[in-house]
Image (cartoon, rainbow, N blue to C red; front, side, top):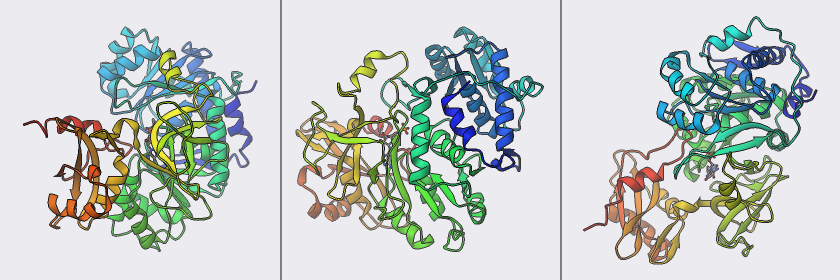
Length: 505
Ligand code: AMP
């Protein structure tokens, strides 16, 4: 039998004895063990009644075994459904109710509090998986045979559902097929030149597309090794660099590492590639990183629903502040947000994508799905952007983060990059705050450098000559840091809530 995605992975194995994952505690999983142990877990899932198309929901801390569980689901014909470890029991209740998984796998320590919730949602079995190769899932699977006949699944069958972070309204389950994942992994391996010689520093969470699919699927196809860290740990990353070739991170990784005294050209001498994504990388971070290490960070752009869409080139200019070119099999256009019709080159509009990477729709939300696709099959990403004369894609902000002031559109990224360039500013976020005269008032939330004297006036006067008047912030508010989620994204919804009364008399 053939499992479209897993077949890709098994076909790529050239050296079964090679290490696929090395965990921070020294535990390793070879490629042969990856096949055998995912086979055992697949048997265990079937023993717990998992059938083709069933969902297996998982909320556990990062471990190599969670990756084996993902592969086991794919092999058993099930749909892997990872959940953010930060979700509270009340949130888990929503996801279990919405996805109706057959099995739910949680941390051993959380079983007691989550069991009644899972039972209420009709989940048949609650299993546990700890970070030390422990838990009832491991107990159930280790006596079983490692030979497993994969359940036949084709390119369009679902492999995973990933819930979007949902800063507006309820989270939606993005349905990803075997070929959505396989095609993107194939593209990234060749675009980023991954081979079996690669060793990837992996400090991302694995419930999100970045650490789970972009990193793991790519390394499975390349036959490389991943060095697993439970979380961002500057000391450990610097220590691992001489053994590694590459790292994938969110921008916070790079800003934090720049604050580490051990980061140097020598420390990064063995590395060939630093990749950033999931949130915008500051141009200054790009510059500083290059000065300190000699490496130009490669920035790429993707989302849960689409996998990766664009990337700066491997050879050629990696341009700070851009997300590079559309990937080879991704059709990307900039369209009028209202009508979807193409707009002239260089102008700002909605980024829309079509290709084998684009998901199959939102789980049990046919209307929402229909609303987010154009009749010609393009997915409306919700990101506003433009393509410059060299073909590089620029993201100017989420559509919902657009500020409309006195009838004019203000794209946050444009104002943010001007403010970020003001001496004494670390970074900034532009939000729209209700304003009696203007509808929304452009508002800047700014993180100043410690010990530097920047004021509302000095920021405004520095950017005034460079921006049209309507784009200038009505207020500049200084904060110690911007609220970010685990993927490094600034949570503008929280800022909008916090400052919603700013312009009220
Ligand atoms: P997620 O589905 O959590 O991966 O979030 C996807 C969103 O993250 C995209 O729609 C973008 O708004 C944002 N994003 C991802 N990569 C980048 C990037 N390199 N620059 C700016 N925004 C990004």
